[in-house]
Image (cartoon, rainbow, N blue to C red; front, side, top):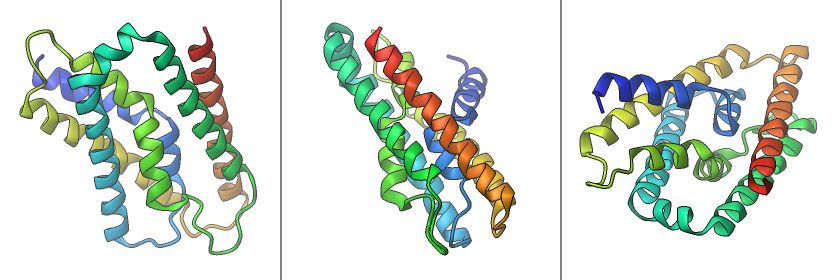
Length: 186
C-alpha cells in the first residue's frame, strides 16, 4: 500500500468521532502539556497494540469464530454505553470527566477502529511492516492532537457550552454503543 494512501486513510479513520476521541475532547482538569502528550502516547500505543494483535493472530481466529466476534462487539458496546452514562451525569467540581488514563486506555483497546485497521493490514504474505506501523503511529497521534485541541478550546469554561459538549459526547457514545450492539446481534 502506498504510504500516502495509508497515512491519509488512517488519519481519516482515526479522526472521525468515536469513543476514544470523545474522551480526548473532554476538557482536562490538568491542562499541562505533559498530560496531553501522555494521552497522545497512550492512545497511539493502545491502537498499535490492537492492530498488531489483530493483524498477527486474532483476526484470522475471529473470521472463523463469529460467536466470539459477536461477544467482543457486545463487550465493546457495553463499555461505550457505560462511558455514555458516566458522561451524562453532572460532574463534581474539579472532577476529571475523562476518567483518567485507565478509562482512556480501555476505551482505545475496545474501539473497533483498531480491529478494522488490523484486519485491513493483514495480508496473506506477511505481517505489516515497521514502516506501516510508523505511518499509523503518526496518523493516530495527529488525529489525537485534533481532538485534544478541540477539548482545549472548551477548557476552563464552566458554562452551558461545557455541559453541552459533555452531553453531546455522551449522546454520541450512546449512538456508537447502539451501533456496535446492533452489528453484533445482526
